[in-house]
Image (tube, rainbow, N blue to C red; front, top):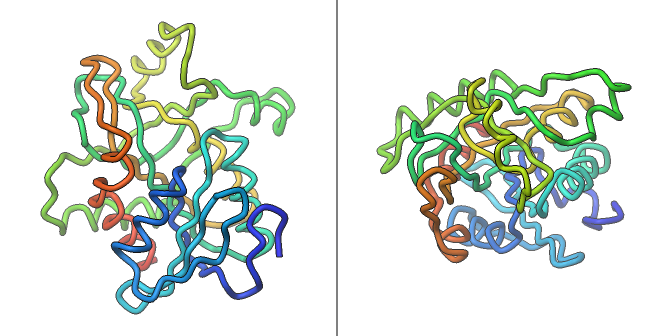
Amino acid sequence: MSTHIAAAPGEIAPIVLFPGDPLRAKWIASEFLTDAVCYSEVRGMLGFTGTWEGHRVSVQGSGMGQPSMSIYANELFESYDVQTIVRVGSCGALTERVGMRDIIIANGACTDSGINRVRFHGLDYAPVADFGLLRAAVEASERMPLESAVHVGLLFSSDQFYSTRPELNDPFVRHGALAVEMETSALYTLAAFHGRRALSICTVSDHLVTHEETTALEREQTFGDMVRIALGAATSV
């Protein structure tokens, strides 16, 4: 039993979908899993385990930002022997190459966070996805009738949602970053440290160029395509 999840041994599956929003975790469990059972309500960060097409799968909220996400990822890896985490989150598009509700499968993540600088003694580390999961997600997306486009590329994991220096996004965009979110860089780093698999699949909920946005309820309950891709990928590797 861990400090922040407090589930009993065996209650969490080896495969975990990892939304930031605990209410999205509840929605995913309700809409996609069979016989889902809530194993944690600590601090309102809900976690559920059920089955999907015969595979045992858990869904765990992670909160917003790399520090919060890192607490839950560490506990899942260390205390519950989770082998695969797939983040299913929202992101803000940084370029007109990406449209609203498009899906981004992140092959890597850059960041403005100091977390990895501390971990690597001031040196730069390149956090990347597990290739098997990445390939499986792309293949799953190609088999599905999707309403939106799918992109494979870089995410920018920022420590600030309300940035006072938005112009600092520009160098990342010029070097290929498609969208900004707040968790993937640390998730990929922790998975590498623990020798586990991780992937981020994000749906564009806001557009920093066109200024379009979705509602909170839409972000919570209407991003089903990325969940289907995540489940297809995570249960095939």
